[in-house]
Length: 147
Image 1 (cartoon, rainbow, N blue to C red):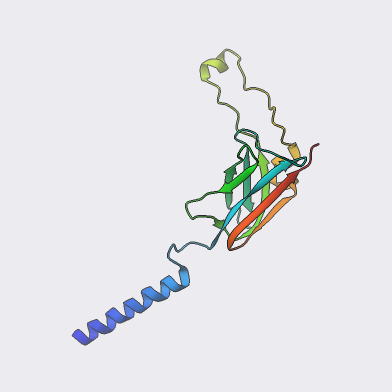
Image 2 (image 1 turned 45 degrees about the vertical axis):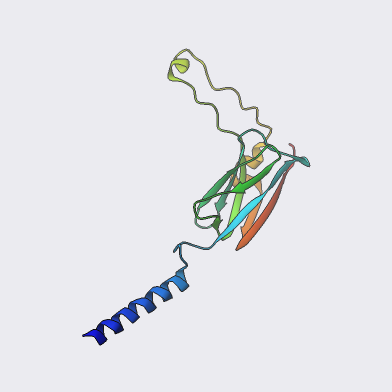
């Protein structure tokens, strides 16, 4: 009986080690650290609360980071990075301020969009911005051209 229990214990230990070696401790996909800088016409672009979005081309998985005032960004996720792969990139203005229902009833509307982000860069389909995330550290600099 003890011998059979020892064999089972060894088998379970082997399977546990094999699983960890093959699937990693987190069990999730491999990720890469992503950071970089966005410029507009050669100058750092960090419009208040503007965001850079990454969307994986085949799965549609996405990640987002806020642009700092100097145009830099770093994607932070619970996994420590974003899954490896090819990404389409878009840069979007800050979300509009919410309108209180009482203000809406008075006819008050959200302020007009005054963002300097050219419309072409706001959509994944038209931005032309791409990133391929590999294991380890990835640094991407994106230049927007004024329109």
